[in-house]
Amino acid sequence: MLFSRALIPTVKEAPADATNASHILLARAGYIRKVGAGIYDFLPLGYRVLRKVEAIVRQEMDRAGALEILMPALLPGELFKETGRWDLYGPTLFRIKDRKGGDYNLGPTHEECVTDIARREIRSWRELPIAMPITTPATTDMTRPIAQASKVSPSAVQNVAVVISSNSATMMVENGGR
Image 1 (spheres, one colour):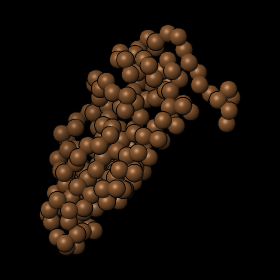
Image 2 (tube, rainbow, N blue to C red):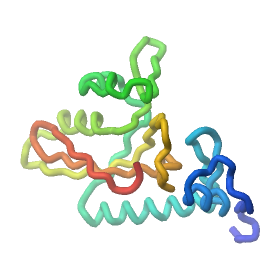
Image 3 (cartoon, helix red, strand yellow):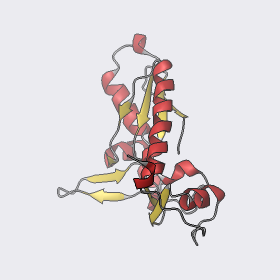
Image 4 (cartoon, rainbow, N blue to C red):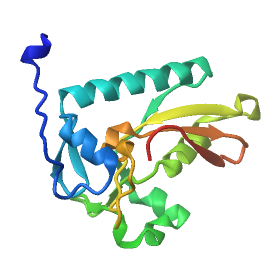
């Protein structure tokens, strides 16, 4: 596509609700637009940059020997209840009941899911340590947004779960967003 035909809607004025430099610059340059509180659309230019950053992270993870996994945004409440974080998160955890009355939540983190995968799938200590880069939408209802450009999109979250012991303990090593 020609640059002259691309949707890159720049603006001169900073958004009224923008509180940090990264938000102001991304909005003015036509990379993002606010949809709601803490929810942003990535416009074509911003999405292109995001994909390039994700490709660099994936390339480095591949070079390190990690195999990427994709996890769902909607998680069963049982996993969070098992660790006690169902109650610990309090009102900041988005909770949903399905038609059968089962508890679910939109995942702010995925440590519980990685631990569940490890305890079900790792059969021997010889398989350890194992690194699993996680690309996932993560959602939180923060009372105060953190001033980072990578916070504007749930899809920018990239973590690496490293399972280091046979009792399925996981250590989350942040790499990228969140």
